[in-house]
Image (cartoon, rainbow, N blue to C red; front, top):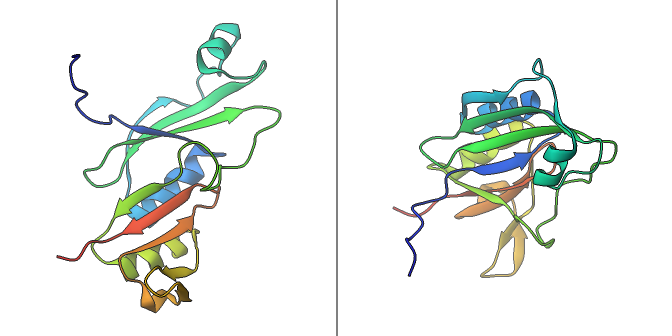
Length: 159
């Protein structure tokens, strides 16, 4: 039996604009920038080798890469690519990364902060009754969407 993995090191997200995504994560979750691994002022990362290694289409390049941290959680690496055609973010029922979940102390306050930062909350669903409720009826979790379409869950646990 091989060695056990230690932990998830980071999660990478492709965003349309690293600066705007950073601003959203700062406003919504108090994120901090750890470092820029590649700045827009640096030459774009491109060419046949990079295309092969990262499965990028011909002519695609990445122009900005930044690592941010929310609280003491796993860092989030933000990538910004230049490409002719780029699909929108996957939906929860598409194959792949479904959503990121952030544990918060105050769900009401976190939901409000998420919206003020530009996020859109989905209707509040109560699985026990199978009905929809209002933001004031939040009880444990709520889903939302970032301005660029990544799905985020805000979750809190009873003490």
